[in-house]
Figure 1: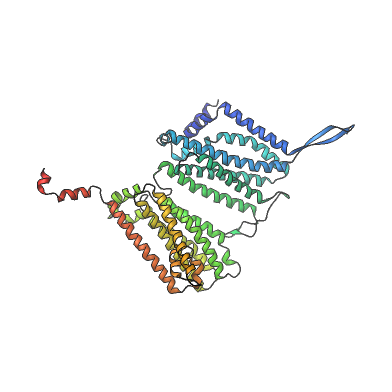
Figure 2: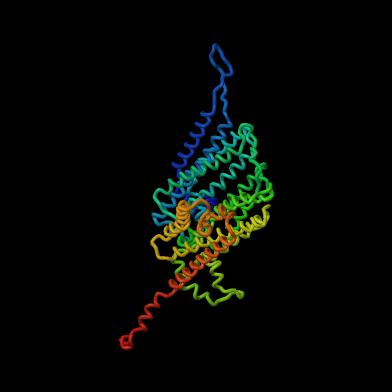
Length: 527
């Protein structure tokens, strides 16, 4: 009777079938069902009371049970997502680490299944017992919500948000397992899941007025022209779309790392779409600010400081995501670059296309493109801000100074990844931290030793990220120009150094041998 559906399931996703056969045992199923029913019974008993309706000789002969359906509903609101996030993430990562230790994960990679099919099989099959236990509690949750008078739209949106957030957490867990391996990884991810799940559930719980069973007014805020604070439906759809897009990008990175553990998290083309999408998403949240009351320079610089700081951390993550490892850079420099140097496609040199789109080429040009995309997104918003032309010019200069520093950090990271080191990512991260914090530390010490007032503004502007938004208003145009030129000089020096490193590693390993052979006398060559 069930052979045909089972065969179809196995044909659709063999990995899912493998996981289900290993976990859906009768003993495990009975334990999960009993545990779920016992917990539901305890919740019902905890929020119920026995009220007497008839007395005879001071004795209660008739009574009724009354349940606090609202508290039962709210309790399950916390138990369902926390169990799904914490236990599910723990099982998923523990199973992944076990497969890696046994070596079966590499064997799975060699099967004809696609990487998407394998990952889907893991996410659907490994936590299947968790899904079973929680599905048994869904009727009680729905019934309690209906009995308590909770709007059905809220319950539906809760389940939709819980499912997409669960997918996001599971994808993040698998991506973390692809990047790192540690014995405590499953427990640590479970604790992180509890923390993030508590935050998620707390935000949903706080956004609803449980006393009057109506949606709260979350204030006057919007995304572009859509008002989200006063309209629950647009807010729910916006949140669903935001989380779903996040799921898509994490899924892309997880899929790439599973197929090729030595590759990059994202391709350069994907990074362009990612940077543009994230910046447009952030722009939507701040779009209405220029249309509000008359603004001042301090307000604009404060907003730009927050935007620059967000872009710094975001683009640093993109830099690490698209920067190839040393061996990939060596292969590209030795074999790919020389073959593409003189080739053209549609009168465009292939070497430039390789810098823009290639998987193994350095990320410096791609980061420059991403910085350009960020500037294109924010310049219209900056021009619409109701301030003077001089203030807008200073704001553009501040953005240029911050963009130059991000480009400098990108080149520095790429250089550290080329140099031979045992742990290049740790070296790159440490060097990046020094480049960000050491100038701030040194200039702060020098500042305390000098007289009062802003001292050495050129060094602050050129080397400390975020400094333009603090001291740019009191800085002369000559100092700003000098700082920009100084940054460009340093970036040019790093580009020259990067070019030399690529040229050096691109030389064939046999070149020194042939050079030594040609230097020998003819008699030695004959011998």
